[in-house]
Length: 204
Image (cartoon, rainbow, N blue to C red; front, side, top):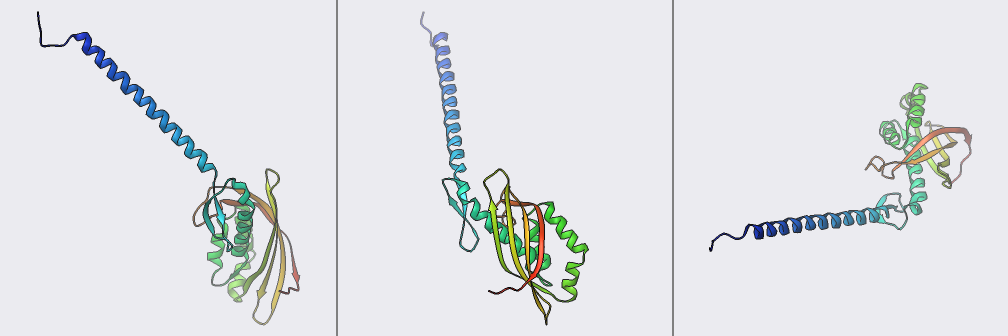
């Protein structure tokens, strides 16, 4: 006896084939997407940032990020010491705020100590100008802890008298997430300490 309906088993076989095909396509798509993500992740590990001759950060692809670490560390230290010690009555608040983004609580504690000692009040009261003349840093990046020693030479202009000082400071650097524009190098100064400060005779 003929019927217009297809055999129920044939319909079920077709449905089963369709379901299996959809599952296989889904698994294949998931595997392909996973491979793409893995490949992008590996390529991202080789991405870094370069430092221009003026200390600005330039996005650039490098084979190894550590090759550029020393350049970034020196630029970071120069930026911090410029902000923290190159100050006058008109810019000290803005510069110190920028400097605090480049270090941890050791920088903040030093700032609070100087504030309590009246350093910034004298800056305002006598219209002092503290100008950085040179910054020279030495890095120790061989171990797990990145240490530094910096020699900062600055002068204090008191109007009729200009005195020059040499400051030796030490500390460590740790790698953190980059924060544009507050911490473009992705480094943080820790254990910062002003070791010695002495008056010198400076010549360019």
